[in-house]
Amino acid sequence: MGLAVARELTRRHPRASVCVLEREAAIGTHQTGHNSGVIHAGVYYTPGSLKAQLCVEGARELYAYCEGRGIASEACGKVILATDPSELSRLDELERRAKANGVPGLRRLAARDIEALEPHARGVAGLHSPNTGIVDFAAVARAYAQDVLETGGVVTSGCGVEGVEVKARSLLLTHARGATEAGHAIFCAGAWSDRLAVLAGADPDPRIVPFRGAYLRLVPARRQLVRSLIYPVPDPSLPFLGVHLSRHLDGDVLIGPTALLAGARDAYRLRKVRRGDLLNTLAWPGSWRMFRRWWRTGLTELGHATLRSTLVRAAARYVPELRAQDVEPAASFAGVRAQALGRDGRLVDDFVFSATSRALHVRNAPSPAATSSLAIGRYVAGEAERGFGLEP
Ligand SMILES: Cc1cc2nc3c(=O)[nH]c(=O)nc-3n(C[C@H](O)[C@H](O)[C@H](O)COP(=O)(O)OP(=O)(O)OC[C@H]3O[C@@H](n4cnc5c(N)ncnc54)[C@H](O)[C@@H]3O)c2cc1C
Image (cartoon, rainbow, N blue to C red; front, side):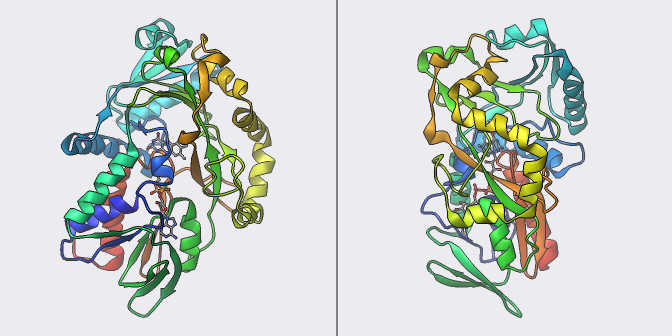
């Protein structure tokens, strides 16, 4: 997000001094480099929401951007499968949303149509979204960084911001390399966005609660079980959950992700715990409200995360031939989802942007924010022009 916003600002305001401060040594170390790599088409999102608007625009722009920059991407298409008649009303709702959102080429599938698209998949009905595709988002982020540099901006890595002081005419950001005084700042810190927002004077609500997403992968000899992307019909109250099968550009086919409450905001290993992160989660009233409401779902997710056979069984609902011996762990793909959680226990679904003195904050940028990044960059740059009084 930070690079997409900086890219847009340097293009619109070539004389402005734009500097990206990145904590890690490399670009795309966190969510952007550890995700399913799917260019979403905009099927799921509530019509009129920011997600709906920015995903449909963002996907279109991202394909064009990748083509222009020589980044591999492929509109391989996706099927969303109902495996039980009880899911049909939710499938109808998805179809309605997709049409309202202007998702290109969406088509309803009868059971007999599924085989032509995914010969090993089964369902009672489905949707086909031909414009859903795949890309390596870390490669996209590296290209955004290159754009920032080419249009006069600066990207400084190894520069974690630790303090924010609001002064009369500027913000003083203290960081690992000293301090930077800026007229304005836009904070895009993913899983740490709440912490930086609070440092800048914002309300602690919503808090980020990390969920670890792990994957299995098909062994090479069984990759032919999946041609492109096979997704379930999501539960509308937990739309980010649902085991899917996704082909990656390098040929790998992943199964996942799981969604297990994590002990650290960078819990790329299952057992990684950071005391501060865990306390932050447990001390938040919303966490307990969430546990009370969703404990059953939590147990299912715990099963997916700890027992390989449970995850395989969930995926075998869509691809019945799938067996435990067809998969192996794919530890390097594990990601940590920054889930914004309200004090009232509400899992915040839509993108959330907010403001404090001289600053804007991206407070919730879950999936499909990577798909939507160019559109989000434009949206936030527009907010910055209004909020900071920049001449468009
Ligand atoms: C398992 C999983 C699967 C997903 N699948 C998809 C998908 O298929 N398609 C899709 O569109 N989206 C997907 N997403 C969502 C997508 O990855 C995120 O929405 C997107 O990458 C968010 O980008 P970001 O810049 O907000 O966060 P990040 O990529 O996490 O970046 C935040 C950056 O802020 C830096 N930072 C943090 N604190 C500081 C500090 N104090 N000082 C300086 N820098 C700091 C971090 O080092 C990091 O580089 C998925 C996410 C997960 C976790």
